[in-house]
Length: 98
Image (cartoon, rainbow, N blue to C red; front, side, top):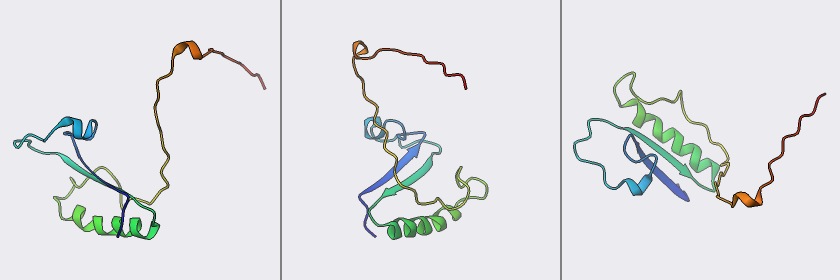
């Protein structure tokens, strides 16, 4: 399997700020592990989701994550927030009655 990106996050430690959070403290009582991949081959990504299921199922019952079932393979929708000067925007409200 080949992936363009392999994402590993520890929810509760570095899921929001990534590498800027630094190394996790060695005495963290618990975290939720989240994996994600991005790749060109849909077959590879689907295989990844199948390989992930046994990892999840080896955990304690009822605490194996917040998702229901095997994750589905989806196209990536990119979101890129950007700041632009307020002077370039003209606010406008339009009410259309049908």
